[in-house]
Length: 178
Image 1 (spheres, rainbow, N blue to C red):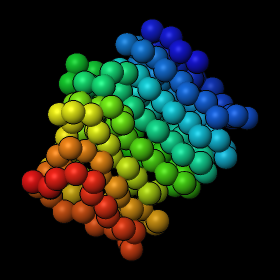
Image 2 (image 1 turned 180 degrees about the horizontal axis):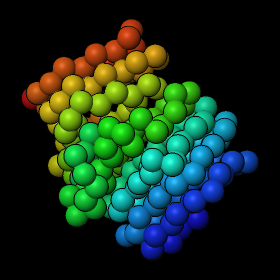
Image 3 (image 1 turned 45 degrees about the horizontal axis):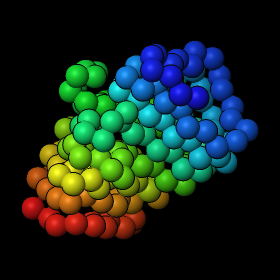
């Protein structure tokens, strides 16, 4: 489903096939239980909100990416501000239930900055990517992987100004470190 306006799911949703949902320049909002089951789910938008009444559950891949390659992505954002980039508060990230095969934040052609702004905990293997020319990743606050949480960083430049902890999962970096 692709639109250039707000795309909101207010009731429970259960997928029966892989899906990409794109709100273009609008907000994609999850306000109910959204179960992707064993199917890959890609959410793309200028803003993606996982409301307090919403949750994401699945066992395949979950990808969350901005609508444009140049847009920044902020994990652990203090507030929701689409003008600052695609942001996820720690509370929103906590509404992504444990069990996904993988979580991916950012874009393969991303030229913006993907940053960790405040402490974040993720419970599944996670890839942070901004692979486009000029793209970068900045870990400015603690990043923790619980359960089978592991981290892969894919970017032309990755900066670590805070610690990364896992419960035994690996950490890999593709690209130069600063």
